[in-house]
Amino acid sequence: MTNLAHNLLRTAALHPDRPAVKLDEQVLSYADLRDAAARMATLLRGLGVEPGDRVGVQLPNVPAFPVACYGALLAGATVVPMNPLLKAREVEYYLGDSGARVVVVGDQMPEAAQQAGAAMGTKVVVVGPMGPGELPDEPTELVEREDHDTAVILYTSGTTGKPKGAELTHFNLASNARTSAETLTELGPDDVVMGCLPLFHVFGMTCGLNASVLTGACLTLIPRFDGGKALHVIERDRVTVFEGVPTMYSAMLHTPTRADADVSTLRACVSGGAAMPVEVMRAFEREFDCIILEGYGLSETSPVASFNHPHAERKPGTIGTPVRGVQLRLVDADGEDVAEGEIGEIAIRGEGLMKGYWNKPVATDDAIPDGWLRTGDLATRDAHGYYTIVDRKKEMIIRGGYNVYPREIEEALYEHPAVAEVAVIGLKHADLGEEVGAAVVLKPGAVAEPAELREYVKSRVAAYKYPRHVWLVESLPKGPTGKILRREVQPPPEIGGRI
Image (cartoon, rainbow, N blue to C red; front, side, top):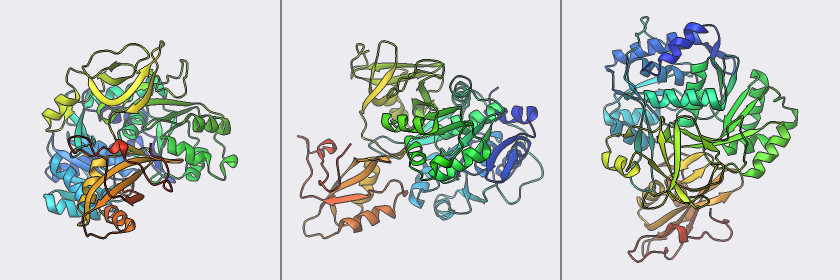
């Protein structure tokens, strides 16, 4: 098996009539999904897509996403998933950097992709929730790919520079989906998986979509997460596996009707994407009589790297132990192993490790200097091999499970004519975990209100990224070289504490 799409063809042959994906009352069986994806591949080939070309997919959690994703894979193309909330200039960067020939976008919010497509010469295909209104009659046969060929380019970013495209191969994604399905969630064809994690994110794509397709499980989708809706779908569709970020668990826990929900079918709950507060974990488990298993991973690792495994001791507050086919180490600044109990940077290698950053060999060498990915996350390891994250070397903000990179928001603020200097930091938030805040120094003689600056950024970046809190300061703390020291920036008392 090489092309990841082989999983769909095999499952559709074994279980053609089983439900593959659901959106409330709308259902695609595995045969339906296979046929729609094969015809989607024909549509893409008709638009000039050749094996190895990139195809953007900017869709929410609707059946059209797996149709487009697997359609592109069947055609031998590389999928470039994009958040449907991205604005035109953000989409333009993704299309331009990846060289995408086509982008598939939902009909509810097509404007950003259409603007970006026009600017970059990228063809735009607008589809409904179930896929294109019309598909070619002839299906495309699967185009074989090699294990090391790139299946997906997932854009991620550090605290500096533009987003980088992590190249995940067919082998990377197939291996991680199989490891997740077999050793973590133990999926089978009778399972129903909650599809509330964004499919354009590697967690939802691998552990939700790809693992379900591999095993013949049903993925029931929620395009926009709501705690009450999630509890309703769990009861209605008899969901057996819930996968989410901590804020989703918190939202369900705080839903007024939670006591009325029947969640007795749940047998496995998985959390990742951000640290799960132990208090939230324990409260959820008490309320819903279930166990949450927490794991850890990155876009660059396809993603799952470590996990509190289902048949091993669970240690709340830890990220567990390495998963099958993956190795973890803790290293110091020189790349040497640290002693047990000491803090070190997590370094990862194994079957899920990306090929590299798309067209960025220097960034790839910096991230993987010796075959081990430097994650930027600082952790300890106990005598039993369980890892606990203690801090982030990077200054990324994780807001409700979404990554927000300070430099990107700062650059947007710097475009405002009144702004001289800015520092974006993470603030504590009870439900989201972290909120985005910005301290701004205005140019001499310039005038701007915090609300004006907030709205300015809001119009330029995705809705989850813009700073909800903006405050004006006379100056920002700086180091000896003049570099702004984000770590020393403090918000006003009325806003609350920083992370």
